[in-house]
Amino acid sequence: MEGCADRSRDKPEIICHCDINCRPRGWRGRPSAFQDAKNARESARRRASAYNSPVLISTNHIICRPRCPPPACPMARASGRSAAPGRASRQAPHPAGHRSPFIPEAHPMDMLDNMRLFVRVVEAGSFTAVAKEIDATTAQVSRAVSNLEAHVQTRLLHRTTRHLGLTESGQRYFERAKSILAEIDYANAEARNALLRPSGKLRIHAMTGLGQSHVVSSIVRYQEDNPDVSVELTLAQRMPNLVEEGYDVSIVSASHLPDSGYVAQTCGTSCSVLVASREYLARHGTPTTPEDLAKHVCLRLDTPASPGGEWRLERDDGEETVYALPPAPFQANVPDALSVAVRAGRGIGSIALYTALDDIREGRLVRVLPNYRLDTLSVYAVYATRRYLDAKIRTFLDHLRTTLAPALENDLRELNRLNGGAGNALREVA
Image (cartoon, rainbow, N blue to C red; front, side, top):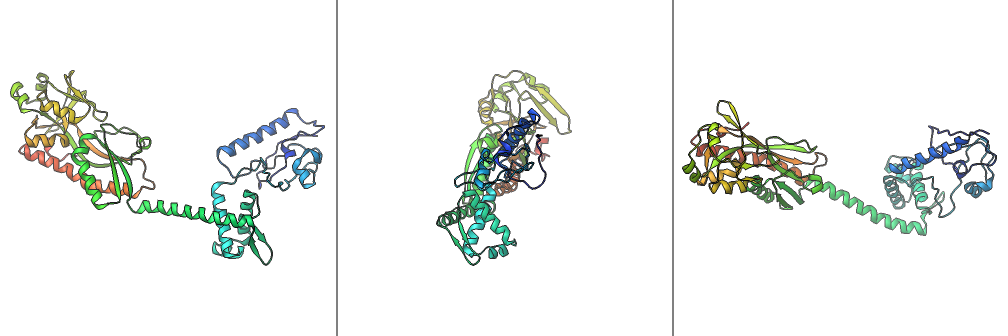
């Protein structure tokens, strides 16, 4: 008597307990063959469970070729048949309330489709009518309902050649299934509508200075056109984790973005400028070249997007000077905090134009080295993915493209005007 473990590539076939679990009397095959087959079957079961597979995991496993006595197999006993020598016996129908451990649960999407077909059959009163509606065969529709009955382990329909009717259990199942399918259809319609019409809560993150100077006003105008969208705005001088923190869009400015796997849309450009208070310049003089900065107190702004260890100054003719900052008496990670220290006369600081412009316009700050431009800052709208973009996110991104870029360009033109047309930072930043 030989033992083997053969897995067919043909149509899956359910086999009885004896073919898998029973080591028959008089086993004389290779001792490890039986255990190898059991291990293979257990491995298949784990894989099917891990992938929620609807495929039968016991497929033509022929473990042995003995005459397996009927009492050794509960499935064979239920059918009154035993396994024929050399062949795997087919599984008999399960007793009521019993499910074979070798038949995994039906896939949820298959169950949903079968449930929908069952409801349509009941409403149409015919398998044939439903088959014509969905361009299928009557046998396919009947098989779907039979699979549903096998899954719930109860008969839902009385079938005769002339009549199709609900059982008592089928009537209850039909009413509940209609309610469930209606809820699913409503949820699908609601989700599709969210892709078409802006509504719901839009969670936005923006860097502090950029948010206060431009993003808030842009959001206000967006909500005027989209009253069904509520906005939750968070200002923080960092790049958040959009997925973990639940933000729809993050608006940041940086000389470059770190790799993150997110999608980034450019919304315009700006730059940083060197500024100081009039009082400070009256006491310490005004630098005219980058080398003169060594004689002054230079305050540092240190952020993840703009590390504050050096200043890169580009002149009108393209010449670049890198000034390494010495230890500073004051350092901040938020532009507004640095602006307060600069306005108080503590030293010279590098501040983004959109943060410094109001103070320059009002005369609280004076631009230093106006013929030099510091880092070019790109402004990005960052979001998680392009696929199935919600309408409120898509329309807000479009709104940023049409409002934020012009506002940043206006900042540069205003700085040009305030400086009498002098300076490379005053031309449009590429």
